[in-house]
Image 1 (cartoon, rainbow, N blue to C red):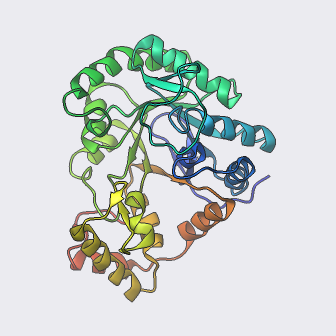
Image 2: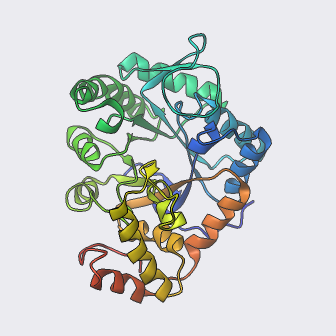
Length: 340
């Protein structure tokens, strides 16, 4: 039993309903630091106990470690109503050793290679089901087909591979009822739009590109998502940290030290928030849900207290005057949707 008061929204046309706060499994793969097994599993259990029903992970996260830990938490909780989301595009090679440059501090000692082919997607999904210990996966995303990951010189090849291979595999699985929703998970709104125009997708996970700080997808991609009935999951709503920490000296933006112009813009946003008695991170967390195409915010955490803090901040009041002042100050466009 849960006592969640988290709202739910439809995930596009998939028939799935997801809580507006989802749980993102990247940190459980020892992303920034080695994380104790008990703490990792307890963090997922806290999310489930809070009523969060969307759990997103990927083979990339700790080379499968995130999926292992999430699987353990699911078994311990006994929850059957959880929407499980994972990704394809990488295949594990258990005896190849690590060394893919993924940047994870820890994780399993297994290599990962890119494979966006039809067979590669099927194999990746089978491996994920085994690591998770489940007989169903609800949402499957084609992962990291973007310039950020592959570079401008390789993106055309990777996009073609994904549409000719992985997309066909997932479309077939969806038609057979084996999965309920298919999509992509990338760091660029432009690639989301390109996929949306090329195929029939239910959902997309966009990281870092629709936030209180910046909304590059607003003009073109977000309206297209609404038109096509694509439900958006958003990651990175703190832009790698700066919207949570504020413009401190160590603030990170896009996983790098924040440049002066970003620090200045965040300082201006925080000043408005302060005038209205609202913490910056609360405004940053709630802002993206103002857009009707957004179904859920996929938030990472490494301890139970972080999950509970997110739940609390998501429901805490924010005066409408705060959003109005941000627009008056030119820190949000006049046409940007905000929470009501």
